[in-house]
Image 1: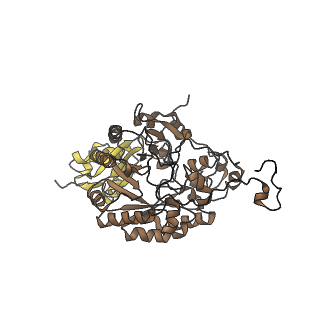
Image 2: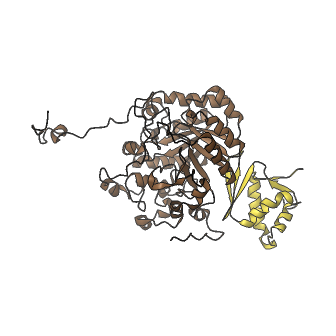
Length: 407
Length: 87
């Protein structure tokens, strides 16, 4: 039996309180559907097809009322593409009517001028448009043909409707780090706030992470850029592993999984964080005793709120700054959870990462990807290579094929 | 400020937590933390107290600690988490 951790005394740093968990999450992500009209190569939730067990409209309403009772001030709604749910706007209206603010993420395809005007008139709703390249060339390779134009059209519609504080949300990749200034210009031109987040190796992101995650020198570039822009750019506390470079970035700078953050997925499963949709981080389901009971009593969350061992990292001078980095990033790259982040800026994960044998990374526990062709489907970043049938296929000096096994 | 009537801004919601409370302003989307439960009691008591000084009194804040609470309340006023009561 594990004893509940003692609450720290008043006067302790806020972060110390947060490590013990809060009575309700500060930042709750709610993926409304796994259905998506796109097929982005790095999708955290491997979205595409709707899960037939999706929460019904009534169940969504009930969940919102529970959020209200727990004083969850706002939810981050995502997917999939949440606007493809036919009851999406009804759910948003229900949340607003129950004093639960909504920030929803969208690829922008359905943000028409009429919809933008309605959004601009609604209090408590923020819109976050996803864009992963400051040019169509870079963006569409990851998100699909026509997605750059759709995102910019949505931004224009929102600006023209007078929407305040639209967010332009960018996942930083090897290809778009050189475009940071241009992203800021696009945001400024549309009266939007730029939000940069970290590429996580979760969902389909695990398949492209090795090719797309920023190079070490680009991590430094991101850090310097964020320091230079301060609070003028949002990060969702994404880059706390970069705090090891020196000064902490604005934000809480800790892993909030199960402590101040969690994710509710389309079928009501509750995960420790939005980047950890995997059985290993599944705390429970809202269909049983409700969300509050999972948040308060799930053994997984009790474990995450108990003192964590930093493992090898505790010997590092930067441990107090980066706290060992992101749990999900470690897990999905096959690294131990109590060791360094795969993108440790001190390079402490390089050896361990190289030693992770092929096929030993955790397999995804679910995949909702489209099985057939998708309109706008992105051109893969790299064409998947079949393993060579014989060394000869790789090098003319390699051993030839066995004539008996080739046809 | 001590002699004036103040209250929690109408667009701000307050959520008690073991360490104190969270304040969230639905208009500015700004989140603030109160790290002292007595400060929470003071803020919650503003609307029903004739003046800020009375709210401090009712929350049992000793005179020796008034300066610290006064500074905290000024910070909340700057963030418009609390506003001067006009009616």
